[in-house]
Image 1 (cartoon, one colour):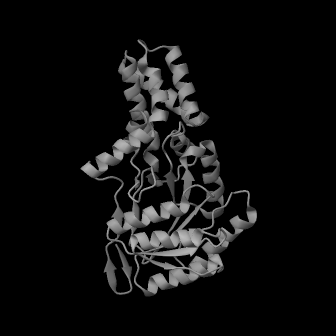
Image 2 (cartoon, one colour):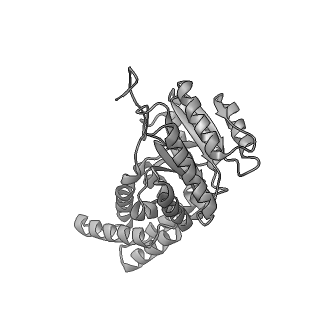
Image 3 (cartoon, one colour):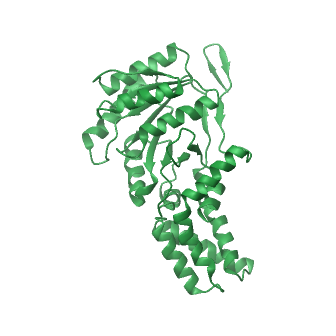
Length: 321
């Protein structure tokens, strides 16, 4: 708990996962369907009759094709071989179960709850490259927070892309939340006004949409740093969360984005989108092995409800289902 003024505030923890209610089960079914292309290529490895070097070679190739990355693939292979030997497993299906456990263990450090309420407002900066689904994810995150009883103010600080302000306004309308926006305004100024307004209006969260950019666009990366500095002028404790939205389809490039944005902004969490219809679902294992920034949410689909908290065990089982 934290003391804000004279009011004692109980922070709200957005749970990593809830008991498997019907709604969550529908989400898990959708996640499994979305990861089917990745999972089926890995599951084929275990259709043989015996555990041998050929199985491990096929597993290595399948993991690499799923963009698990060299380091994570080697870790998983070593873990699977060790556990197979120690358990005395004799059937390939047992190896698959061991892989699920090993993958869960690898992904567990990414599993972290988003806590709202230790600061009011909790200021969340959201960054990402163009096309990653950043603004759409902000809309979905707004709905997710609203479902937990959290009041949200949106800041349209993406003044670089012509339609971004209008797109965010649509999401604000869908979620019936307020938005701070300026036509052609300075992104840092918009953010400062939003944080100030969020405090004055008693909002729980200020969500800041920043301009999409590539890590190689140095002038835009500097603008992101400026936004962060200006946020700190409005609230010395902010931003309280700096999230990066990454497209799960981009494979190892997603890992490069995490490295670059973390160097610039010191990321606190990730939202991974579009984990459907590709063979790239293993990228979370690469992130866990090489740059374990927490994954607060994963997204599959375009609907408002198509964003859910990340759970390592659920993801591992969906990937290998």
